Length: 273
Ligand code: HPA
Image 1 (tube, rainbow, N blue to C red):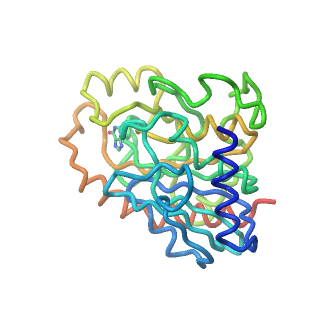
Image 2 (image 1 turned 45 degrees about the horizontal axis):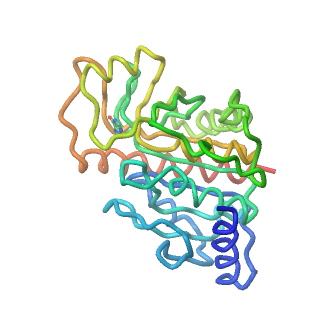
């Protein structure tokens, strides 16, 4: 495993003539790919060209690794991610995050589209993730521990760095983004939830539900990477507000929130040391 990761990282470095060392990694969620329009792009690689990289199958994800400057900082952006529901195993789902770490990133920023479980949420709200619940059937650390990456029993008491959460809230106030905070629960999907399941997820303490993020954050925390994550609320999962969900509605709600999310991530990236 570590050899495959090294080979992917070596290939990427060669493609960039060893000229670009990213400081931060960013993963963009469903319908949230337009952050790259704010990037001064230096290099762009197709996932399909990178050794051992899984290839994205979801139509709403474009499958590119993009290197560039955002707010004056060097970032690498995954435009399109891998989900367990696509049939990848968890090692494949988190493969790119591990490659990012080998390429030298110091922090990870993640976005996703999620259903809102908290009764006060509206569609196109942003929710800064303060904690998570993993309801995926497995996780990327199962199996022999890769000691080169991190410890057997990584601590999970602060998967989302408190300092970055506070900074995000300050940015939100300054720019009137009106972000919410809450707990994200990750479910396998790909079907959306029944009303009874939404009620259950809310009861166990979740404020938003989605099908991603937690595997990547677990792998990042394992490697000692501080994480920041934000959900865009694309549909409401509260009794009385539940409607039939179609992908286009999710994409429309994400597109509406995208400028706010891009601003938040750009301003946050700018002030990291
Ligand atoms: N449930 C699960 N995943 C989602 C949802 C949802 O309601 N909305 C966007 N991603």
